[in-house]
Image (cartoon, rainbow, N blue to C red; front, side, top):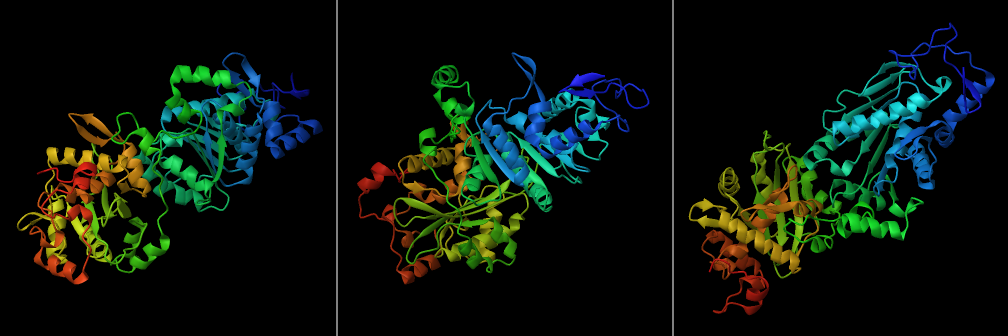
Amino acid sequence: MKNTNTLIDFEYDVTGRKIQFDGNENVKPAGCKLPLTKEHIEEYIKCSQDIIYFAENYFYIRHLDKGRIKIQLRDYQKDLLKKFINHRFNIVLASRQIGKTTVYTIFALWYALFNEDKTVAILGNKLETAIEILGRIRLAYEELPNWLKQGVTSYNQKSITFENGSKILASSTSSSALRGMSINVLILDEFAFVMPNIYNEFVSSTFPVISSSKQSKIIIVSTLKGKNHFWKMYRDAEKGKNAFVPTKVMWYQVPERDEKWKQDTIGTIGLERFMEEYECIPNASSTDALIPVNVMNELEYEDPKIEYIEEIKSKFENPDFAKYLSIYEKPKPHHIYSIGVDTSRMQKSKDNPSDAISIQVLDITQYPLKQVAHFFVINEFDYFNSPEVLYILGKYYNTALVFIENNDIGIEIARSLWQDFEYENIYFEKPGVPGFRTTKRTKIIGVNKLKSLIVNKQLILVDYETIFELSTFVKKGNGRYAATEGHYDDAVMSLLASIFFLQVKEYKDIPENKNFQLQTTNINKKRNIEIPTAFIDDGEIVEEINNILNARWLL
């Protein structure tokens, strides 16, 4: 026998057999009977009812300097453990190196030990990370006294199964990671570092299944990585717009960290990294991004107006299409709108794990231009439905000007909108050929113009997906810009299309523009639409436009 916390522990079971599992003396096998005393049982019950007592008396960690030590919980760690118990959905925005992993490993082990037939899944952005976290739980389990341990039936790198029917498993975050499983507690580690294409598939396939149970829990813990999905989930939680209870843990809540520590750390990693990783302030873009960090940090997303979406929902042949639509402002009488389209076959490939269709709507009546709507869908939409969406949005926004890139399948969508839906206000680059063709030169011009508009506050952006994509829209070489690996740029490309009118040298007065259908002239004249300043030409180039927007790039 050995003495643990004043209570006698056991090396042998009631039959005199040595306690071990597959030769590991620190792991208790299933079916192992111990001669427990009244004091053992009382202590077991106390641990099962008080997670903080359990942690501070029986949970050991490996400290880099001190080796094996019993955990001493900080106040914020106690607060987190209580929240994990009392709330179903928790999201934690944490500074680096504050012991966040330790907190949820305590919860995972405690929950599995003292509950029957429960499954705890720990998902990391990489499988290796998840396995390392489960390794910490295994070490903590092995440090427990045998009378407090559940016996195990399976014990390996990716999972632990206890004889009470509960298990803890580790996997990477993917749409198929938990397929077919009943999960009671889902723990997502460093969720900000999951790539957007994986995040979208994971959330759509996994969250509804977990949330369908009235007792299941989701715990999301991460540091920041720009204004991405995790940042938005946390911000929405702060605003009460989702079911998650938010908690922020800052660097200065760790007792030994002071101003000198802060300055030393800044001297080592730089102020920009310190602000994101320790102050929990997102750097909204990288140094290679099209839009400078300081400008990106000023962009704030708005929530779509649900009532506006409901108004237009009935116009779609399939009302479900409306769930991909974000409307921020209803059409105003006599305002002119521009619609830009980025087309896609919505097909996955080795080089393109997911694709999207994006349709941007801008109010271009006057400067600053304003984003008023965005249709964005990934992987679950037949691109042949795009003309219907364009027709409905175009008509809704005062028969908006539609700019469709006609490279590849764009020409099919443009022709369908023109011929099948008889939509009149489409830009024609060539007679009989609706849409425009993107070249390397026009894309570079458009990208630079987009940057100028945003930096000079001549374009107001309010859509989250658009703002986030801009933060990952970076220089790749040879002057080419595209999304960083694992991210999308469809919203940015449709935004470029929506400002294509600024590249068209023939634009002087929209109703007289021969590249638009003749009926457009009549419709606009009947409406008596006020032409925006950008289209006025009194025989001279307007100095304001030339200086601020440089609208006539191709002259």
